[in-house]
Amino acid sequence: NGERWERILDEIIRRGLEITLLMETRVGDILRDAAILPKYRRAGVMHIYVGVEATNQEALDRFKKDVRCQDCVEAIRLINEHGMVTECSFVLGMPDDTPETIARTLELARHYNPDMPHFLHIAPWPYSDLYQELKDYLITRDYSKYNFVEPVVAPRAMSAEEISAAVIDCYRRYYLAKARDYLAEKDEYKRQYLLRSAQVMMSNSFLAKHLGLGQMPAEIRALFPPPKEKREKAVGG
Image 1: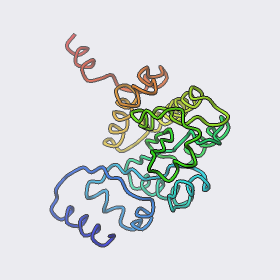
Image 2 (image 1 turned 120 degrees about the vertical axis):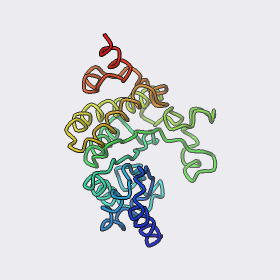
Image 3 (image 1 turned 45 degrees about the vertical axis):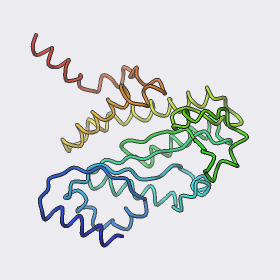
Image 4 (image 1 turned 60 degrees about the vertical axis):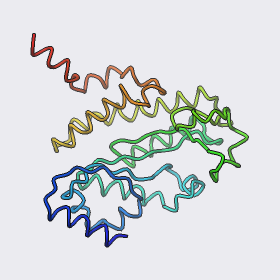
């Protein structure tokens, strides 16, 4: 309800609540609210996750996203333009994926330009619309692995190990380039938020455990400030 949402934003601003909000919403809602995005920022919305999932229209239609690729690009552009952190995900590991299609997804993800993308393995639960299409490609029915960071589907042209390596490579290549953009960010709050978030994701998160990102590439590690305890030890001598 766009009108109700705008009233909520207005009331947060009027009361001067000084809160910080992370929100998850739909691409269509961002396009609908293009004219009031300054209110988002004034009300404390600093981080927005939008559902993108794919960089080609055929995949979006298969995922029943009811959105166009150009709409996804525009929504992320608008959020970036208004100084908020953009987060989204791209799903990999469909039966027809190949190293070439994954490289293309990475290339288009760079075109979309989110601050914090996730490259996720498809995980078709038995109740999902995609299950019947993908069930013959399942390599496990251990549902503890249906967490989007472990492969449960093997594409026709790739092994589970190859699709996992490709996903890890997407993270490394995207964030290696993006970390430099973080450092160039002029908004001090957003710059520190992005640097700390990426540092946690690569070193301590669920993704780090399952995707082997715990060993941060030296090129990226050099861009980040040392953890707080190391800074304090250095100061304390």
